[in-house]
Image (cartoon, rainbow, N blue to C red; front, side, top):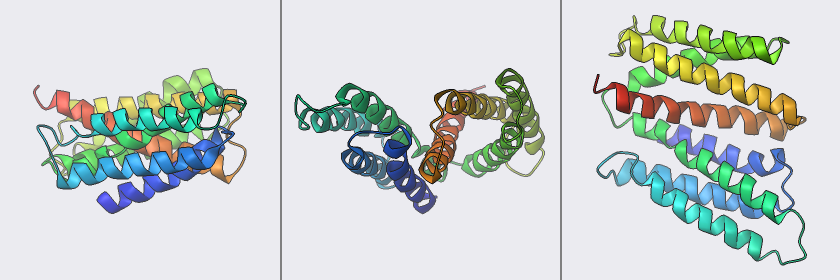
Length: 218
């Protein structure tokens, strides 16, 4: 899981600044790669009070690095504010993706992975159709929640309502990002496709992880 997570983070680090048309993509790519890989390594080799506790530190360092990278471009450079916003957003998404590596460190991690992947496939099948956003925003979460609940019947040590919640969050995420991508017209080439797809996968893992952190006490 650590290797898979690192590959997703590296692909996302390359594709994200090009997807958002950053004026200086390479500094953002390097920052995203360094911070996300550091968070994944810390998740695997340096677990703290929580397996994901070091992600906060990686995000804090990443925010500072993004600001510095834009300041060093000079006062005359264009798109510095947009670079900060897009850089910080992408860095947070990449770092939170280390939740996939964290899932291998807990007992319910296998079930979390299976349920999330099944929910992603269900929501993805909905959004790839040329349906209006108002329909996909309703249909994708419903389908993903139903599939997540159904997936709990597999030997995954996940209760039905836990699977339903993870599926619901995954469906909302997929539907929302699809609507955002269509509205911004940011997915026009291979970089856009890679950035959006890797971002969805990374963020869905984080959403399922934190959902289970709460639902485990119910």
